[in-house]
Image (cartoon, rainbow, N blue to C red; front, side):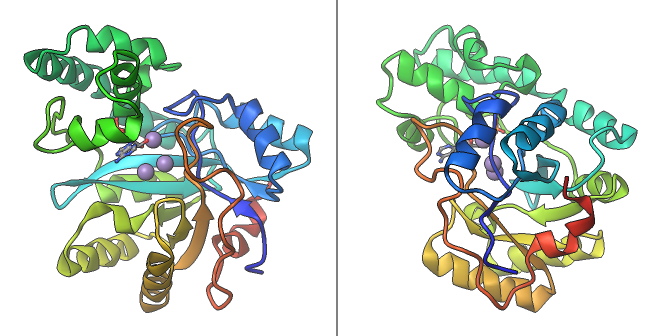
Length: 283
Ligand code: AMP
Ligand code: MN
Ligand code: MN
Ligand code: MN
């Protein structure tokens, strides 16, 4: 069934969102979400809270995360759904991949200082509910607070991205590791918002081919990061590679996110939704 208000991608204070898992569950229910997943970056510490909050709200729930990987020199995100949140190799793998964030944050702060913006590390840390997960989003919030930019989107246009002040290249997990952690914990690996990466056609073909070879099974088709034309393009990619299709807002914050939980169009009808293959993992 494609006609299901499933929202399988969002962030809480456990990564770079501004709402708690409980606040997100309440908002999802208010917005008519029927099946929900919390997918914090590189972190599954919010999963038991989210599952309990979903139950209290009468929502069906899938465990979730969004793992940062490096592929063809770029950062790519792999969503995992329906895994066992206590699986030791998943817990350890994610802990390892979070490990580099502290050092990176200090280097980002030095780079911003060289551009005349001081105290960014301490400023960003204030916004990080989980210090292990200090992210560019927390720096963006500090730059808005400091009056350097009016909103976080402007920050990402002027800072923190390749070639701009505050950008520090980083090597994340490998595609193979991320897919293996998810699948060996009983879950499904899904390529997040593929239109965002700016890959050439060849690089994108390599991404999906290797992803499939490692055991990946899904792709986000309808996401807050895609245009309507990109829904069509990645519906074609799903068919071409035999991947199931996912749907998720990528909601972070009522103030910053332009797509709210549960407000996207339904998946195109002819695709296999990820929740069909994950029916046995729904709580
Ligand atoms: P990090 O994992 O620390 O590299 O931070 C990545 C996060 O920054 C993403 O998950 C988004 O929440 C945010 N982000 C990246 N690019 C943009 C952008 N262009 N506009 C708004 N937020 C962005
Ligand atoms: Mn984020
Ligand atoms: Mn992402
Ligand atoms: Mn996300």
